[in-house]
Length: 561
Image 1 (spheres, rainbow, N blue to C red):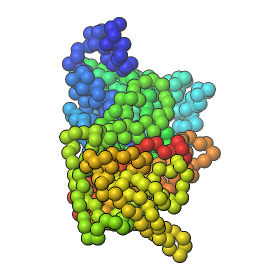
Image 2 (tube, rainbow, N blue to C red):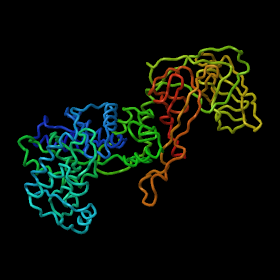
Image 3 (cartoon, rainbow, N blue to C red):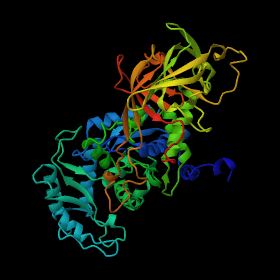
Image 4 (tube, rainbow, N blue to C red):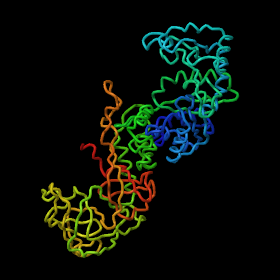
């Protein structure tokens, strides 16, 4: 094998082998098949990246197909959100498809299976069917309705379609093998009756096909060459092939290329849940503000929090494609957004927990504009002007009256550098009746102006503080987010519910002050608040009320916690 092929992941190796065995490259086609019953989350980005990535690698089309066979849980809102998320990630699809497009064809094939004695209408209750299916260690027993005649099955199945029966009164099952070691092949359900309005087909249908029946045949209709799915569907492959091979016998002339299912490990992330059902519970219970709450692992939540498509793609690329399940540390995702924003985000100054500093020897009423570099990692980012005056805010935790030698920030009698400005020395402080410091009195050295090139400005000082001029400061709301769950695997405990691990301090709303250069920042724009972390403008922001979300800190502080 060449060096190039050694670097291929196992799915690429499968495709290369198929091409080597005679498959035409023109017949390569992939798909991403989400169910529109919720918003996409970070776990889906791996499947998205694999399918669309293979499409890019092989210059092959990729379909976006919505598996919309359960109208009780699916909505147009979710369809729209999924399309928006995939586009935001930078991918485009060849065709937009829906399983509901194939309802008639699936029904017609089911009729042919009935005629061939390979499907029958069962009239047992769901509890009865569950009991007669057996267990992984004991064989199942045949349904008492398994020997119905073809004519009776056809009549009942048509009656199901025509709305003549109640929900649960009948189902259609494939007739395979009730003793098969793979329980999925013990006469699986193909159709159930459901009187729900479908978001696309309305009330045209009252029977809906099950996933295993729909999924493979939709792949077949679309002539998908490689049906790629996560490892939990590996036991389904045998059933996928059974349905496929039987339908191929009916339609090989129309659809000459049978699809092949292959599985990869899904993305599991620490401190995160990936179940759409559980995420929906968080939304419905008000634990979060919605699907796009910045604490949610949804793509829309990550986007609103300030994550970039590049950071997510780099994360998925680093995780890689494998066959083995594992849990990825969420710190890796956070590292990737830091890495990206370090290169692209302009630096600004903001104070989240302000304390007033008065520079007593700076002339009253005077103000000046200091030059500051926007991003030292990007020369093209240019410079901005930052106003300076006699009174400024610094972070409260950046001052102590007394401190040991390891505290390099402001303390009485000691000197620090103000970022892009001057050196100041703390001389005294004012306290309230409770002993809390309310104001710090300092003096500055006018010869230490940053960038002036004077000998004094080159003097070494260990502490550098960010600040904002009180006269020019803009009020802003900052939403500081932490992880939504305190436990590394919140839904992996048998004796506890995942809701017990919700972090009560996952959101803190802070009244902050920011420099005036970002007063006109647009929604979604990202910044580094110097010494604090990366922040972006939230969707709720207006011209009169700036709102920032904390995307991530400058370094991982969770380990220390």
